[in-house]
Amino acid sequence: MRRMGYGFDVMTGHGFRTMAYFILDEQGWNRDAIERHLAHAERNKVRAACRRAEHLPERRKMMQAWADYLDGLKNGADIIPLSAPQFGRG
Image 1 (cartoon, rainbow, N blue to C red):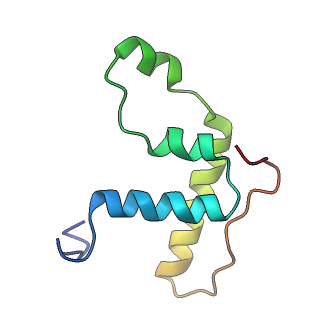
Image 2: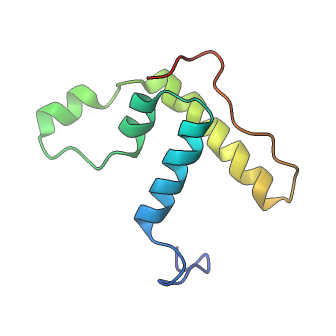
């Protein structure tokens, strides 16, 4: 983050996480998928192995939509809000 120009007084890692969570949530992505994707690493190795793939197809689509959204911001495009019409609220 510092190499991108964000100082300690501007943004933190948890700040980025929170921003992503709320934007994705507002756009209707499944809350369980959002939380699973943004969660801290599971300390229990057995649970980590079992939970790794939870919501994986939706998470892939969600992260591609997020990447497209960020690319649009970077390029100065008019941003169309992310949406997840094929998925229900979680």
